[in-house]
Length: 470
Image (cartoon, rainbow, N blue to C red; front, side, top):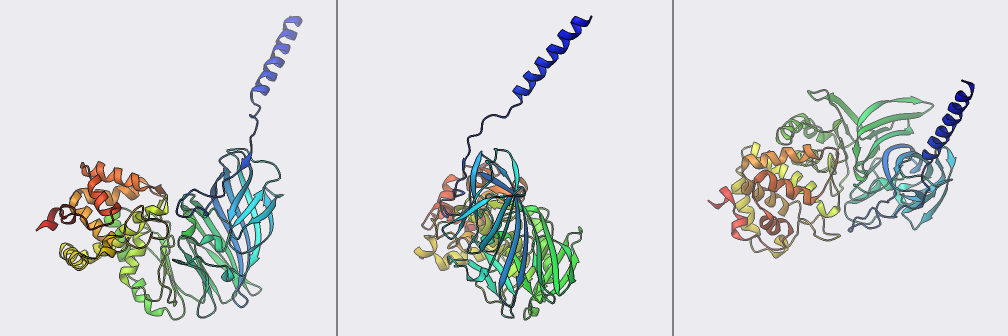
């Protein structure tokens, strides 16, 4: 009995050793994450090697001096064995970087990239936390033009941040690409008397020792350019939608005239939900500025409005909460998936008010019939720097023609199924075409070529489909 027991013990030891050796991780082959997310229109944007999961952004801002202090933690998962990786951060000075509490080396690569080298390589699949402390005056960071205001000062001394395609990197370290959506929260410290508004749900604020601290959380994944912060002496209105969704709308001094427009938000969202399906966001509202910027922006849950905003602007920016925010583009060449839908939503609202859209369409075609500039604007694959040129006007006509070609029932299904299938994710133009063909039961390649990829007026069969022929 004793010898048999010894054999059993010895055998157990061998099996244990065998199990241990089997559990040893495979050897690592670390390399640097790519310094680009791979968008051909903006090859310097974004980074590879990791998937950002969450941004907890902490900032302190002094309106008097314009100085910002940042303390941001990025939670990410390595998608390869990483020897180093990059964040996008424009202009601000970095004081320290830690990974999981350990100091990490960092350096600048040109003005945009912050290169981080962890204390030891990160294995693929590892979730890690990078804490970065930084500071400076974000308003002094150079812009690249287009719809890119950067960090801007408001007329009465506050500040606001809006921009497309670049936004977040002006004020916190980020993987600046819509392909890498993540959850987001903000804790902001400002002098007493100032108010901070951001994305998502308001978690409260407190004032002590002359400083007000406010916290906001966005539990749904958000593309980085849709994050925002606005600091001003706002008038804030709070309410709830019928389903309990919190609504926070903030009006800057001088923007009080927009309160009437903002008060129509519940009606607008109810209308859009009837067209597109349930409202997909965690909160609603708006940031109403007294600033003459040349665009409003669909910052997630809470669009940011210029002083000239009107009711149709409200319709457009909130349609983006489905098209662009919940369903985000994968490449900037696919911007029509955002703007063509949101622009057509304005027509849908006008139709609700009694306008005959076929008559409006025919009138628009007649006015632009011989304009090579108008019809020469491509709606997909338009080329870098031309993304925003045709999607707001030609894009509306293309969507109405598509509606008449597909038929009312099929088009209604498209408006509902597209945001439902890709809720809180990313989608491509190819996926859109596939869904159009699936729902319509038609081969619409020639139609799409004519309207969306083409650079000339569509032929008459595609220009006047369905009821537009009469």
